[in-house]
Image 1 (cartoon, rainbow, N blue to C red):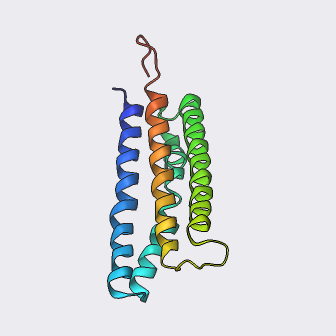
Image 2 (cartoon, helix red, strand yellow; image 1 turned 90 degrees about the vertical axis):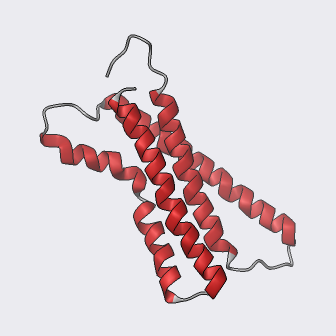
Length: 149
């Protein structure tokens, strides 16, 4: 396994852990103790900070610019752009499916609790991170047998 594929697996695992653990804790606190400042602030922090997690390879490229070794070349940038695009496509499909299912469940005159919205948002973030990571891992796995990077 080359270094870029290992980094792709690392970003995939860290990205899922960053969303699932604190996001689940915040949603559980809201449902257990009701809405208060602490879980809402925690959830907002998760959305703001980890929502931009996909930018990490570009930031890392800028930081490592002074090094002589190439760590993020054009192929890596293309793979990253394709995986982010795949994540966004699946994210939109997820939100459309959630909206249609919610509308079909309660009907046009029904109402849905606003407590469902954080779960929907957390689900979208987890799905985006999962698809983004899987697409990167799959694309890095498509190298030929003799190729080394």
